[in-house]
Every structure is written in C-alpha cells, then in structure tokens.
Image 1 (cartoon, rainbow over the protein chains, first blue to last red):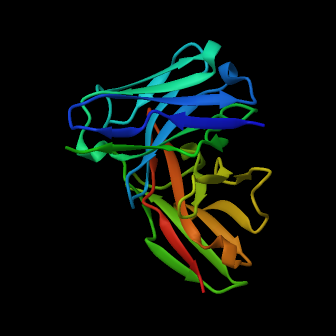
Image 2 (cartoon, rainbow over the protein chains, first blue to last red; image 1 turned 60 degrees about the vertical axis):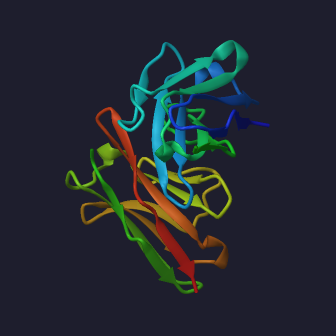
Length: 120
Length: 109
C-alpha cells in the first residue's frame, strides 16, 4: 500500500531549526517528484517547495526561500525539509505529497502531516 | 506574487448544484495554469479531486467536475450530498511559482 509518513515536527524557538522527514513506501520513490505544502492553524494551504525525481530541479515559495532547503535520499525513500531561521509564521502542519504514476501531475497522494510550532 | 481568489463561503441544498470559482490577480485563468481542486475536511489531510482543469482521479466522485468559466477555473458539484460539506481549495501554476487559493467553505444545508 502506498504511504507517505511525515515526522520531525515539534516545538522550536524563533530563530531555531528543524528537519522534517517524509518516509515513502509502496511505490518507487525515486521515480516521482515531491512537494511540501503547509497549513497554519485555522488557515488555508500554502505551497512550500518542489523537488524533481532526479536530478534536482528545486523550487521554493518566496516566504521560505533562503531559509528552507528541500532534499531527498532516493536510497532511503525519504524526502526532507531543513528549516532554518524559523519564524512564528512558519507554525503549521507540513504535508508532503507525491506526483502521480503517470507523471507531471502533482498531489496524487498526501501524507497526514507533521505539526511545527514556532514559539518562545 | 499572484493572488488566487475563491468565494469565502457557499451554501448548497442537498441534491442541489453549486459552482465554486478560482480567479487570478494576473488576469484570466487558462488551461496553462493547470488548475487543481482539493477537498479538505476538518482534521484531515487534503484530498485532490481535479487536476489540469478538468481531469479526475479514480477516487473523484462523478458529481464533481472542473472547467473554465468566465476567466476563472470552476469546480461544479451536481447533486450535493451531506458528505460534501468541506473546505475546497484551488491551486494554480505560474512561472516557477505555485499558489493556492484561500479556500471556500462549502455548507450543505
């Protein structure tokens, strides 16, 4: 069964760092691009980052560029989001999502998300 | 950065039809924005319903359809059911950036 499981969320102080992971199973992870989306408490969805299957074509939202770094380890079937210089407004549930089996279509499947809280 | 606009809230009667729209601050929404539509219920991850304006996934109920309407992307729900009560988001592609709409809270009442 295809599955995406995010982890690594938690409470962090402003200016701190956190690394999120998204563990993939049930499909050939290395063949598909991945996306990070976040949702602040009680707010809408916000696209955060995209990474291609291989080699690394990467995009970031303006709100995180220069502070967040997306990466993947295809040997470990894992996607990562390194978040530095965290701000209060980065508090959100972070979801990873995968590309469709036929390619070029995002958001075929979503994880359940991991909660990041930035607060002093 | 482009702003994507949706109706904040809409109400539809059970069995009725409702159309949600998705506009862009940059001008008319076209197929080149590759519109997506998502459904999200409280406490759950989003579920993708429509991609590339009109295309459905295998899990998309037949009562949902996507289109372009009056310079906007549109999601039409025909024959609303109580289970369709949820937040609906659209998503548009621009050059090297991608933007979600603010969401429409759909009430079935």
